[in-house]
Length: 328
Image 1 (cartoon, rainbow, N blue to C red):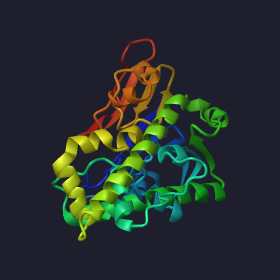
Image 2 (tube, rainbow, N blue to C red):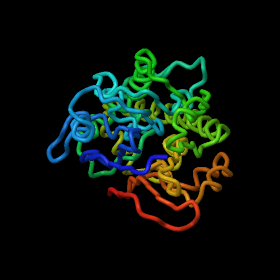
Image 3 (cartoon, helix red, strand yellow):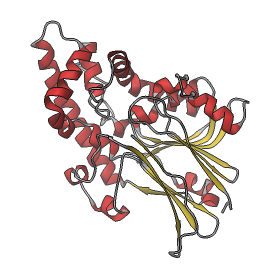
Image 4 (cartoon, one colour):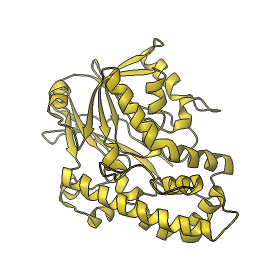
């Protein structure tokens, strides 16, 4: 086990939500999630994710990572990972990724958005999978959010295919065998705490059903409004029916597919990386819940995007504290 570690909570820009965490466990480097798509380039007061990685890992690209983790299929976590891979900013040896089929609730024979002829409907359906943007979001940001949400699935699938082509050992969580991955990282005590396969499948079915419902509702909305504008329509959905939208959209079930990992440092200390969108009182509650019961565990509107880094003494005595960060 490594005796030293660093946890870098990367700047994820001015947008709501989002997480990106770089771990250095001795010689092992692990990048977990990729903030927002726009964080590939810097914005006023916020350095880009590539520049932050350069500062932490050195300016020579691509940065060789021991492990890349994409916790779940949301825009504010996959973020700029597809661009980091495409532009050869990072070159992970291993990747543990949320399975796109499960994350979008797709059957093997499904075609994305089959039967959705209107791009405006496609954008809104994709947007209601994501964390609900609050009324303070300005129009240009919201317009870009809708466009990014609509292209996320394909960009993510392309990223995974590119990683495989370049020789990264990719494990799609819940679909691929993770035995070799766990063996490769036994020296840092990697454990995948959850979720279980049954949990993933239950959530995938919820995502599938609620996406179908969203297509029907948004198509009806468009047919009733000849001047249908996606930005205005999204604002109406949020303003007029916020609670109903939050309870019926697929996004909650996407959060509940988040991969939870654990690493060991030294002989006694443990780092639990709790899924940022998943605030749980204990792993047993997570493992024992099923179906709709899962949704009661989480308030996933992200008034706070939270990354939990918990450093424990396995024997019960606290020997230190790891960095924690709560971003409003």
